[in-house]
Image 1 (cartoon, one colour):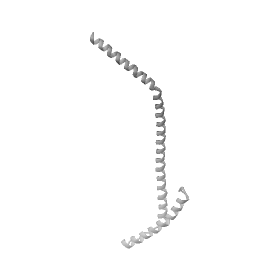
Image 2: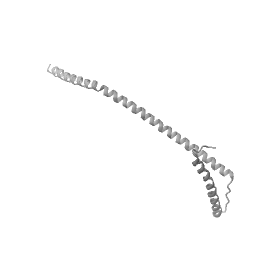
Image 3: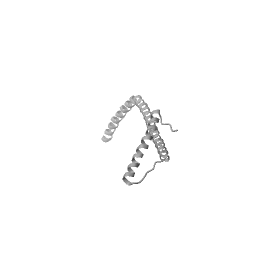
Image 4: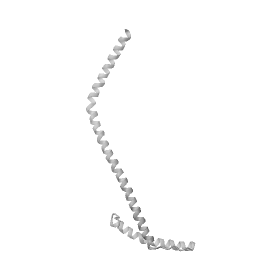
Length: 123
């Protein structure tokens, strides 16, 4: 009942179950040969396998969505920051003549202060 995303994924899961069944059967035979103990597989074992698969798929999808949301949030923040930087750049360009005028006025003021200080020292 779980949406696997595509028909290919659905077919892959369908072919995965018999492979698991055969590998468990082989390992159970090996387990019996080495340890002389039986291991039985029941339909419940395979239902548990499917339940585990769907649980892990849900967890991975949640992780993917969280990572995607974080990435989209970061991209939007970068876009906002770029817009703010562009605005500040325009404002700086507009204020450039004012800054030059203020720096000239400051230079003149420093010259006047130095001249006044020199006259004060003479006095």
